[in-house]
Image 1 (cartoon, helix red, strand yellow):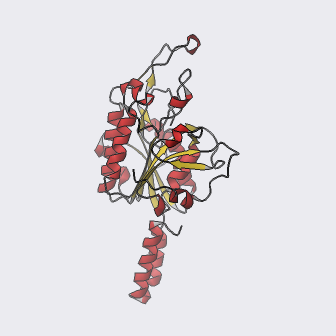
Image 2: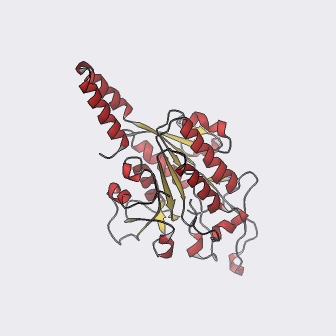
Image 3: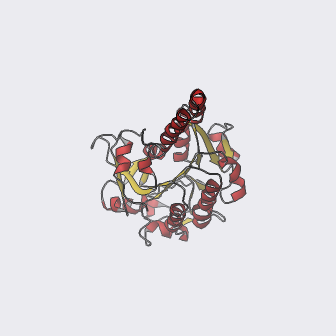
Length: 317
């Protein structure tokens, strides 16, 4: 994930640090038939057919209406969150999209539709209405460090960062994400997709020192909380996010930050967004956690078979 230097306490995965910080440690901060819904629908049809034959048509019609899953993306005002929200809206035959943003300004920025809710993830009560009646939750919220004024790269200086009061990773990436997971569990949400960051296996990772926030530590804590929640989950630890066109590269999955030791440790935002949505469609993506990056454009074949991609993953955390 990459970090923007706007003065916004927290948004979705905005991490892109200026030189002279090394690219190996900086361009990262993130932050079908096998579908469960297909299974439940076919099961309901079989039950109806086996029971009262005259009600088969009603049952099928009801499921046709309910086959559109309601999916909410939090952090919908961020650069990656906006892409997920837009993709969901474009697939209106499959999904009823919702977004959650922190401010009215962010709501206006993404179109001010009635399906965009305003709430503060640090305040559990404020996000409950947005999550009621939702089938799936995609979490793209993250603390964002601010760069201190006076940084001059021409003088060989290293930038210094801080977190605004109330917007430290502990409050946003831990408490804020815990609140979302708790609300999802209480509302009976069927699946939670959480976008985190590679680098979490290393306590001494440079990103943890930014603003003394230990951001990867708190992200990892939230990931563990989700894995222990009992809710079907997909944890995506994205590599360095790039503002490039998606759908053009071969995607790579890994575990335990192994991809950080290679030259393929970045990924386009639209590709992360696509993986978030595709994870809702395959049981192969459930109860799994993985690192995500891509080959350079032109190397390999663009990923189209997401069931096969998810089937490569064996790690639950």
